[in-house]
Length: 452
Image (cartoon, rainbow, N blue to C red; front, side, top):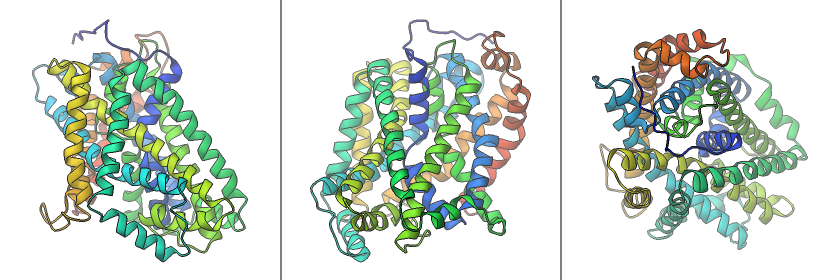
């Protein structure tokens, strides 16, 4: 097959930019918010071991598949499928990825808006309460308010817009080079603080000493799902970003580094949260409320609690932003390359769509709580559609497409930089894409829609 590479297309300028942007795409609330409560609900150490296993047997091969599609075609997700299969219908998966990116950006920005509210309130001293029940009441009052969640959702999307409008190198790469090191620095500061707490050893034992009796089919599916969703696979984020890679970028190594650093962030989040949870007598199974109700109560109990609370929610804002930038770029690249829009116009359109749907999602906890789509609120419906249907299907299609239908010569050229480097794991990657990844993702998909 012949691939028409656009030599004048924007490219990331540095190796740091490649790693910072791809890791930033993967790292988000899924690592710092979702991983701790999933691990807490599924036995801690055993869950983490299974999670790491699936990151590397499913996550890395699928990242490689998306990298190959993006760098090899120099196209957005739709264009990549069309160039690799001009006469096929695989491009439909490209439309699915674009739809998923818009849907996720809409409801994800609502949660990101919550983190902005909590960051601001922490700075202003508005999070000083005396009990966990008060924090629960505060979060309930805020999330059901008809104005504040919408305002913060829009503010977050405006910040997202400002970065994206500056372009690939001056906007996305430059901000990723700043945000990702800062995010890791904040994580390390919190880890050091958590390790000084009274019962830090109990929290670390929960996270790092696996109880293999906790391994059940349900737990394995949860770990597999967390590994897949944590890396933002199935959307086309990695395909889009890889289209900006230089010809000298080593795809296999970049995939392993991306997966490894994404996993490290999840582990560091566990090191931050579980020692604190055990030291203050909280439940590690607190679920999604862990971040917005349990942790603020813990911060209040620490010396300088306002500072710790402000830093933590600032950390969440950064993690949210690195993810929403990559999600937005999927549809922006599509509109620029397939519809002929100018980048600024495409960024306007992407942001306005997200603002409209994001407003509906933000209001679904309050004024629109009774408005249902198939029995779900706007927020839950958007979450279900993307997380349970579009992402698994997108990831499964990418695996099957590259593993079975893309020319093996194209795969070899991409993974070996046209034969200039050796990539001994090529056969293993193809095997995982053909058999292991599609099977694992299919099980996650069936479980998420209630079949298993």
